[in-house]
Length: 272
Image (tube, rainbow, N blue to C red; front, side, top):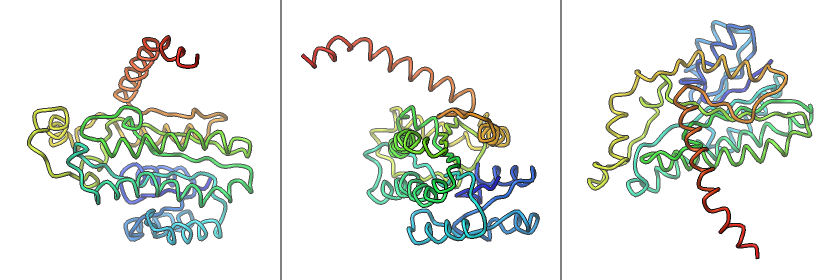
């Protein structure tokens, strides 16, 4: 298979690229600075195509996808590029909100839309959207990150139904805490407002300050699970990764179902 991966320079994207190449698969490794993956090109010269790609730049999106397709088929698209932003909603600046949505949501959708004509023409393909447990559970202190991932999940769920007739599959990956750069260089920070420091948003800020590098999740095991799902005859729409993700998503769904049952009678009566 040939995989097109955004954000290949670090985190899950980097580990995924390394794992695939070690297994003998081919990779289009994209990054804002392709020099960040030059070592992969040197080690696997016949299996890697390194391309510059800022997913927020429509011109670069088109150019990168065109170059990838010109060199061979794209079997799997992995929208991995993204970053977090720590802060309560009120603490965020307009620029910070725009930047997160531009990368995590609009960038992923732009690359997806660019690759789809190629996959649709071939009547095959797999799109892997890197979401998060934060795409299911809105964590106080991660308001805009949750916004980007909730929106990506909604778009991807609809997309899955749209492209299924063309033999294209969609998988939404929902990792919990893993030992990547998410809490390191990839995490932005809002300017704190003192009133929030004693609440949930401040508590999250405090926890994250000491959590980097100590997360329970192993990125290698995570990408192996993703690869296995892509190669499987059938794939789930959603793939949570890590015990924390499973437990938090289960609790959220159970609470949501309880809310639904509690207001079902009143809700149904609105149709009369």
